Length: 456
Ligand code: SF4
Image (cartoon, rainbow, N blue to C red; front, side, top):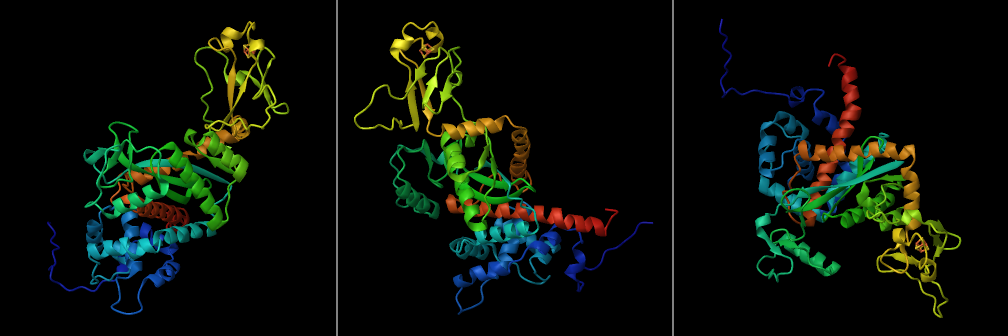
C-alpha cells in the first residue's frame, strides 16, 4: 500500500535542537573542546561600553569555524547554510527563530575588530593550548613545510614589475599593505610581475602557467600532527625558510617549547638555515643538505678533499694543502665572500706538475674550494642523514604533507578569498585552527563516542 505522510508546511512545531544533533557529530565534539571565554576577554577593549549591542563576536567566530571545518568558502553561503542547517545552528547557539547575521555585518566585524585585535591568533593559541593540555604535543620534534595557495588575483591583470605603476586611484587595503611593506623592506630588485589587485602576492610558476600566490607555512609537532604555528609568506625558498625561523622563535616565546629536531625538505637545507638551526638554536637539522658542490664533468668534487680543522686547510688527493691565505697580511682579512663562503686554494707550484691536474683543475692554474662559513653545521646535517632516526623523520614529514592535502581537498582552501598579506594571515590561521580542532575532536572525542556506541 502506498503510504502518505505529508504534513502541512504551515504547522507550528516546538523542537529541541539538542535532540537533533547526533551524539557523534563532529561539531558536538568540537564544541566540547572549544572554550571562547578567553577570546571574549581578548576582544573586550575593542568594543565601546556605550551604544547598541554589536553582533556577538562569539557567534561570528563559531560561524567561521563551521565555514572552515566544512569547506564553506563564501561568507554569503555560510550565512545561508547556518540559517538552514540545524547542527550549525546548534553549534552557533542560535535558536530556530534566531536571525543569522547578514553577510555584510559579518564581513565588517571580521575585517575590522577581529583583525585589529589579532583575534584569530588568540583563537589559534587557545586551541593549541588545549591540545597541549590534552597531551597531544610532544615538543620533541617539529616538521616544517610550505604549500602554495593561489591568491585572489587574476594573472591577466599582471603588469611587469619594472613598469612604473601609478597607485593613486587604486589605494585599496591590499595596495596600502603592499606599499607599506615595500617602504619598510626596500627590495633590491623588482618582482617579475605585479598584480594590480593584490600586489603583495608572488608571481609563481610551480607547475603549469604562472599565477599569483602566497605560501602557507606550517610548523607541526610530529607526535599527533598538531599544527603549532602557521605563517603566511611570499612563495619561494628563502621566504619560506625565513617563515620557519619566525615560527620557531614565536613558539619558543609564546609557549616556551623548543624542539630537539627540525624535519624539513631540501628547501630548508641552505647553509644559512642550517647554521641558524645548529649554531644559534641548537636544534638538530633532520634536513637534506643543499649541496651544489658535486661535479658532473668527472673532475674531483669538494668531497674528495679532506678538511683539516686544526690547520684550517683542505688536503687534496695528491696530499697538498689548500689554504685561504699563503702569506701574512699586514691587516688581517676575514676572506669571507658575499656568498658567505671562504675560498681555499692550492699553490701553483704544487699543481703545475701534478699528474692529477687533468682531473682536478684542468682549466685553471690552481684548485679553489669554497667553504661555507656554516660548513660545520652542514657537516652536522650530513652526519644525521646517515642515521636511522633521519629515515624515521622523513616518514614523519609526511604528516605535514597530509595536512596540506587535507587543507586543499577537504577544507577547499586552494584559493584565497581575502586579499593582501593580512587576508592570507587570517585565512591561514583560521584554517589551521579548524584543522587542530578537527584533530583534537576526532582523536579525543572520537574514542569517547566509540566507547559509548561500541556497535558504530
Ligand atoms: S692539481 Fe693541485 S690541488 Fe689538484 S690534486 Fe694536484 S696538487 Fe692537488
